[in-house]
Image (cartoon, rainbow, N blue to C red; front, side, top):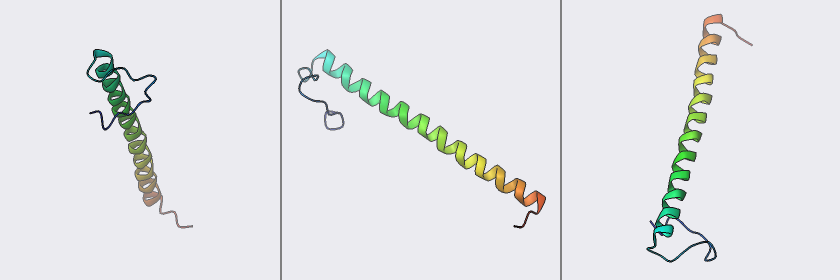
Length: 63
């Protein structure tokens, strides 16, 4: 886990302390939360594109 979570020596406590473990877990939680929110955004964009394609096919719109 230490290889994935980097912080500067100023804000990183001793390795193995409870504060260090909590900081590492907080960083991983924030990354997972960010990935979840971005996946929702990407799914929404693909969903809009699919719906637009279906509407265009139904109206037989040919530019």
